Image 1 (cartoon, helix red, strand yellow):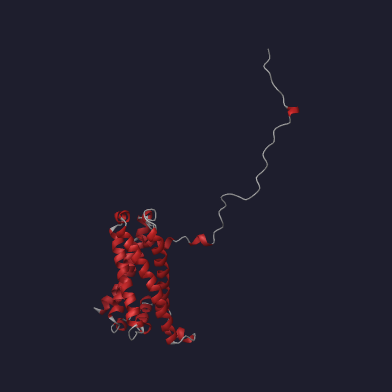
Image 2: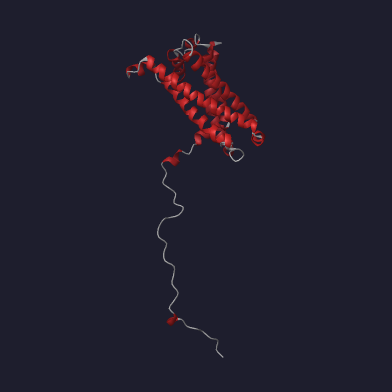
Length: 244
């Protein structure tokens, strides 16, 4: 069972993640979009979307730092375990609260507005439910265990197991003693990756980053317009009369 959950499942989810994106790009490019509903409702979206995206960027950055950077590297850089824990918990709590608030507004928007509810697909509902579950599990680990509880050093167990997946040497024994909420969060994370290609989240890979460095598009120049043509002098005008 341990091998199935901590070795087979992650690789299966990663395979679906890659193959699903390839299939979606080849067969559903018209669906490769955000499916925005801004024209139908903008009041809640204007507040919820920035909170959700800023919180998501912070949470993803924190996960990347905690899972991909070994503890020995931060120690070699002079960052003590206490300092790392303080920054991690504080930053994770702030960005997590932003993510929770933004996601709550986006979900509420789907049910409060009748027009938005009518265009909400089944996959949208599955996506929001999966994100809500992931956020609840993540915040439980950050706030309940690491902030209010005794804490858990996931960098010595979960992070090592996670990096081992990409080195093709995952050790399921590292996850056996992890708290249940961390185990569920890890399993949910890989299942979420398997779901990703079949949702509107594919628009992440089409973010218009080129707009940051492309040259300006000139729609109308600021040059002084050329003077209008003057009428010919009266002396050179000829009046043509019909011949009799």
